Image 1 (cartoon, rainbow, N blue to C red):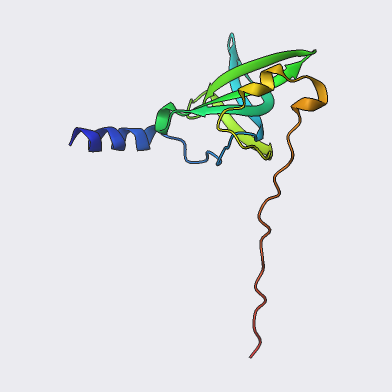
Image 2 (cartoon, rainbow, N blue to C red; image 1 turned 60 degrees about the vertical axis):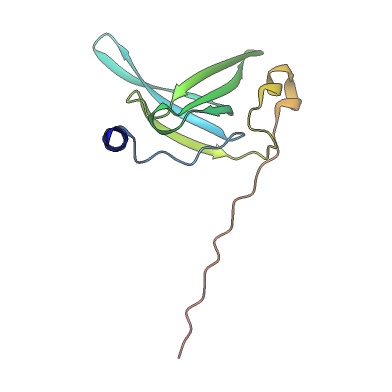
Length: 127
């Protein structure tokens, strides 16, 4: 009974428009920032190196290089401060966590792009 109640609460709080994020994806995360009375959106783009949790506690770790220095941030996906998540490209990876990317520099940090499934249109048959 208690599990069902918790599930109902989680479903009501969860965002509906969250894309299917996978490790190795390059993403743009639009985050709302309050500065005094003004609100603005700041974009953080980088590679998803880790995903942990599930449901409302789903967190992604995003890494990018800024002025030659690696910067990592952990984002709660279902937070109200996250306005939008865009997947720019998908990378081919063979690991669940890409912590080895921390030791890489320059071109070695690039991942091969995963080609998406092409939509096959079925031609209408004329009778």
